[in-house]
Figure 1 (cartoon, rainbow, N blue to C red):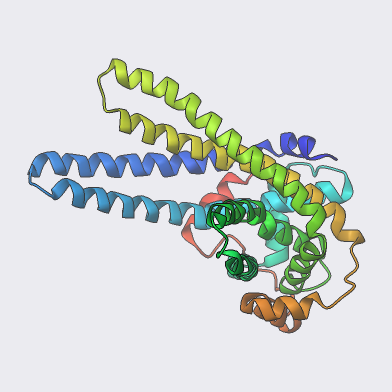
Figure 2 (figure 1 turned 120 degrees about the vertical axis):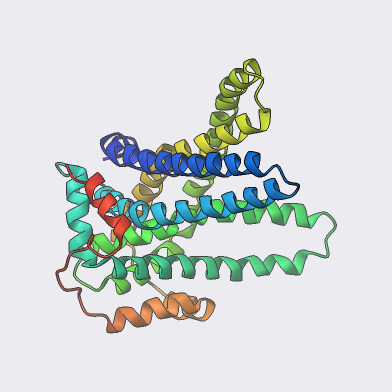
Amino acid sequence: MNAGKIFLKTLPFAWAKMLLNLATILASAVVFAILMGFTLLFRSEGVGAVFFLVWLGASALIRFLIMHYAGYLLKAGHIAVIAEAVVTGRMPGRPMQYGRQVVKQRFATSNVYFAVDKLIAGAVRQIQSKIGKIGNMLRFIPGINIILGFAQLFVSLSLGYIDECCLGYTFYKKNQSAYKSAADGVVIYAQNWKALMGNAAKTMVIVCLAFAGITVALFTVVGAVFRLLSWPGWIAFALSLCTAAAIKSAFIDSLILCRTMAAYMRAAPSTTITYDLYGKLSGMSSKFKELLNRGGQAQPPQPACFFALPPWSLFASAIMQP
């Protein structure tokens, strides 16, 4: 099953992500309206700037609470369904219910899932940082900083889905601990980097063009409405940017996730580790070393209620119900 078909058949996950994003924007807008009311009430110099900083902090906290729990758990279910579809060629019936059940069986508790996900992300970032330091040796060349800046941006965007791919591998390798499967997943990505980075380059272009196009289109419409109402243009731009980010996060990122995981999961089963990447990556990343060590010590998780621990995870559970 190709990435396009998988994306279309897993659209309920994208719509659920969109709902979470809209909930974040709505909550942030309510906080903004309340603080704006206080600003007009006090009419004192400096109060507006203070309330603006408070709003930024509150918005960041709201997004963290919603996306860190409900968003992450939803993402895990989506990844489980994509992995199943790529490997078997069949889309599970009731994908959201299937994703919820598989994540619960694989990780047992949300604590295990968050630990694995954070270790994967940390390992990838540390390895990326080590590789990036190689470019520092070339900084004596005039104008190289611009080239290195674009290269770092490319690498950051291109490697942004490695943790999702490695997480998907944990659903494929069900006969060993999630930590060991995640470590294997990082090594498999490293060994197939040439083929997978080619796909990642296309991914970066799609993300940048799509986000820019959506932002411009939204600002054209919203800006025109604000102009007719004589409202500030910067608010129209901020609203357009937030909405574009929500659409990107829900739909564009879901499509890219399907494309990236399809390429990865097709390469993973036939990959044989031919040299000591485990040792090399352990030397480059303490997080990868911790992931590998836990993989050798961790026992298979015991059945438990995966969605019972954090309060926001109950929201995720409700969304993923058929």
